[in-house]
Length: 65
Image (tube, rainbow, N blue to C red; front, side):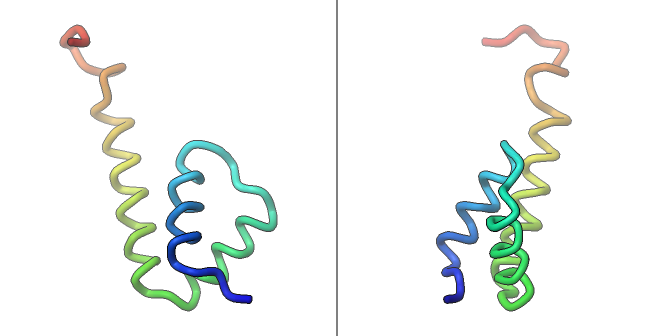
């Protein structure tokens, strides 16, 4: 059974915080191979995650509010 986009986006989000299991990675990879909208969503998740790491409070010169 093919994964639905809702589950795919959940896994994309989880992948930013923890390693996915083999089954999760495989299912997500298969879904992304067939779904252009989710590929774009995945690209955006990655971009936002990288921006958060680069410009997050840990690297800011200002003290946290």
